[in-house]
Image 1 (spheres, rainbow, N blue to C red):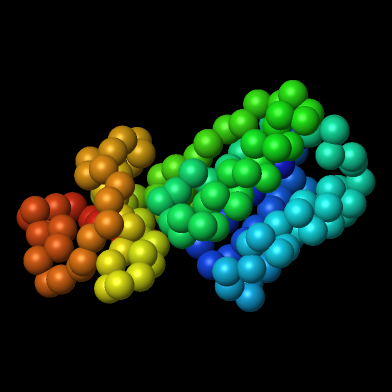
Image 2: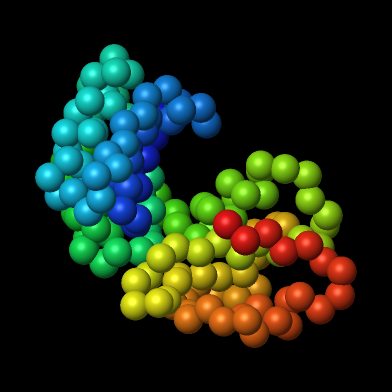
Length: 164
């Protein structure tokens, strides 16, 4: 299974080709908020590196947010265009859930560990959520201004909380 993966929720625009769960080609642009200028070029470079035509993919996976509204629109438009033209399925992945998954996979944690991913939402806010070890949503994704009382109810007891 070859999946073209597109991430545009943050300032970094990235594209990779995943083959049977392993990344085989990757391109990123870290200039910040250049998604509309670079996304299609990154896709072209990724496919060239992988040595397969775009028509050789089985699906497109896309970060669905939360994140930068304009950047998400750019990514969604390109992904939907590819899927429509090639008659391929589109797989939408929650950005915060993906961050929680990556954090969970990065170490060994107790069964009652909670994961709190965050993305800068500007204006002193972050997009955040809370997930358990099974990636079940404990607190739905939302914009929040963080203060010293944030997540206090989850800090009770001895459970581990991983902020990512």
